[in-house]
Length: 332
Ligand SMILES: C[S@@+](CC[C@H](N)C(=O)[O-])C[C@H]1O[C@@H](n2cnc3c(N)ncnc32)[C@H](O)[C@@H]1O
Image (cartoon, rainbow, N blue to C red):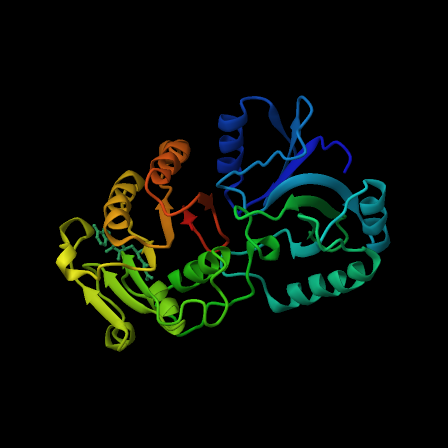
């Protein structure tokens, strides 16, 4: 791979200013914004970048090194060859991704382009690198990027698993949970069957519904009203108690997944997560941290540091496509 000069990051619509602030705060003038389109920003590095540099910004959906632009599948293949890139996968996805996903006709266009590119790019199965081909409006050159396959990166192209919010889901949190499970690598049909989850802030019940559909036993905790279908589900147990008041006697001795979607200050959410993680020993964590102002955004690094003191594994934070004014944090 040639020496990279630019990094790219995709983000949720409207999160571009937050992403720029986060990069400015973390990389203090070393990375400066260069090219900007809705939901896509590149940053130029002032000095040489190490090939293993990771932007790792919570407000980015996908980030990596820029690899130029192309207008045709042949140009994509030529750029890959010119730059000596050895990639194991090609991710083709739209630049503009809505909070509820992408329309079928957009995927059809994107998939057709993917179908034309794949025969021209030879794949190296052992490589950790993934080629991103980001498709903008009709006639706009495609943006090329390279990112590394790591647990911090979402495995789906554009960080967008192809699941649609079912109209009968009790809330949009169904989609947030599905995107988080896919990031945790738990989206295989039987991955969670028979396992136990505790969700703090479960009402009205979209996320719990997703977990129940995957065969989990779920304990939901919220003083708000739950959807009747969730409440009546034989594998669901509800505790109408605030997280700070629940006694451990009311909970199982251990849970596999600890989730939180409480609309509380993130500092308080972390405090509750610490208590429940230490007591219930979960293997996986999936939580949202509400980003209601710029001050909370600037606290993300310290919130993640606090979480790392007690989580079951490394901590990763991203704003997933279905997140609104919040980021998702996972640990495994
Ligand atoms: C975004 S909603 C949760 C959506 C839910 N996860 C779903 O799947 O539909 C936030 C919830 O956090 C709950 N909440 C706020 N503070 C809480 C606390 N101290 N303990 C438990 N739940 C709390 C609110 O009652 C509210 O229902």
